[in-house]
Length: 383
Image (cartoon, rainbow, N blue to C red; front, side, top):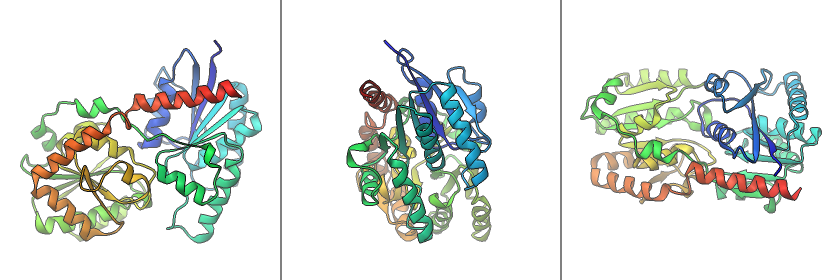
């Protein structure tokens, strides 16, 4: 039986759902059926980990960056095209907006038989200037013409794509983002010691958000939330796990509200399963999303979630069952829900248990990989 060659392409290997899924699929595709490579831009926190992984054949392109740059973009297009030709790739699977556009056109020009793209959330949103949003939509429409399969992480994204005339309904496939459930559900942690690592007393409740500090995630709202909650429950501590371009704004808000002793900026961490065990509530203040992988991580850890009711959130967080959903920027409602969970431990524990029941198999990595392989198999056999 013939083995096929698959190339995953992503803009940058940061800590995030898209990156984790691209890496996991590249590393774990059935070796009896597929040889796989990973192509990425440079400068990501996961670059070293991927380069040292003997199961991943990786290529890094310095010119592949998020910002629009005609010269670098042209060089990137040519480099990807050459790689796809030299590696004799049968299927390209792109992730993230910039790599999604350049990678799919490079695959088209290289004559790659099958081209897939996963939208982990669209690159356009209502917070952009109208002309930028229109440009994003137009580029996605045109690029969908040369794409065989459009994978989305939530049903809401199918509706959004079709409403903006991106692709045809037959092109879309919903495959939810996933996590290693056992890594979160079966881990054992010394709670007091782990809390001390962050300077938190054993009896202090902990609220956390795990996200990149970028406009999409609205990390400033997490600080506003911390300020409001601390007015009612001053012993509460807040972990903001991640980093990014908005860190100066976040730090300024912490200073303004005198929250230095209450909000801990941890930076990027690789011990998220352990951190999940010491928190009481997970929060996500995003303005738009696909379907965040952190929801699955919280559910697997048995933690209730308070998040914004955007895009695919409703497919993971059921209001009043395993968490609460509020409108973006509604700090008062956010605070009300978080305080309710911190005061009512029975409610928080019940919601955590419900989340654990819901997470498998929909958000399981093996389940996700099986569905992706089934799509690959059908497409490659049919072409």
